[in-house]
Length: 75
Image (cartoon, rainbow, N blue to C red; front, side, top):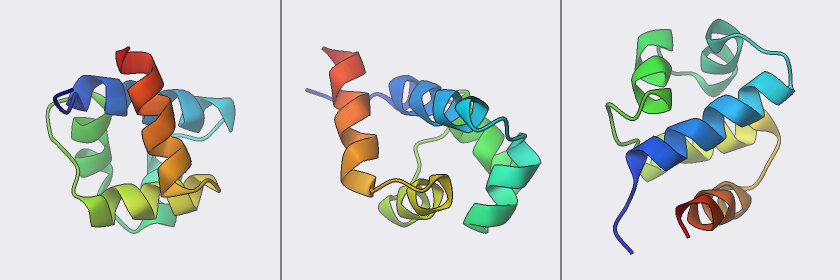
């Protein structure tokens, strides 16, 4: 199954919105630029493992759980 940056972005956006956070809040907690987070959420940019790890940690979830949700959406 090929990597799907759009599915990854949708999951991250959904998790962020469930917490009621803006992109500025999540990007600040993850230590990345808001514009970078926006590109990831819109599927315009594939995030590195390091960036996904930081986002997952900021969201209070494990990277493996984030990836599981992406895989589930791709099926």
